[in-house]
Image 1 (tube, rainbow, N blue to C red):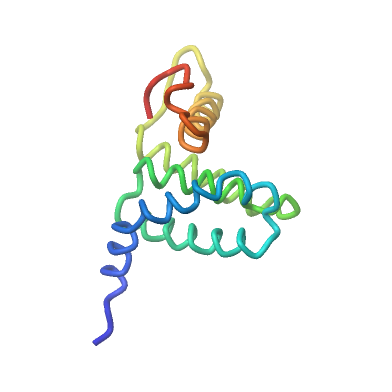
Image 2: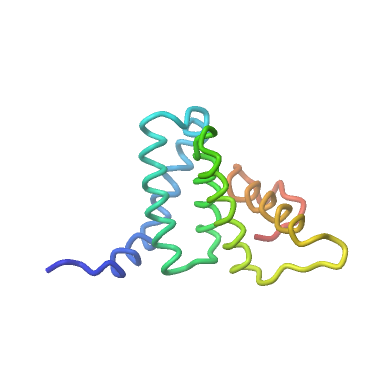
Length: 136
C-alpha cells in the first residue's frame, strides 16, 4: 500500500533534526562553493523539508532556519530564486510573529532587522549566545 503524502510530510518533519545536524556538520563548506553537487543535494533536501514544514509547522524555528539555508544556497546568478526565498522568509516571519508594527521603525525595516537577527541566531555557531537580543 502506498503511504499518503501527508504521512510522508509528517515523517520528514520528525527526522528534521537529523538533517539539520548533518547540514550543520558540513558547515561553511557548502556555502563556500554552492555550485557543487553536494550543495545541489542539500538544496533539494532542504526544499523537501520546506514543503513538509509549510504543511505541518509553518512558523517554526526550524522552518526559518531552512529558509535561510535555501536563501544562502540560491545561486547568485539567479536573483529571482533569492527573491523567492526572501519572500518566503518574510511570510514565515509574519506567520510566526504576527503583524509587525512599530511606531518608531517602518514595517519593512523591522522585518529586515528580524530576518538578520534570526539568520545570525540560527545559522551561526553559538548564535543565540552572541545575539544582542536573546530571543528566537
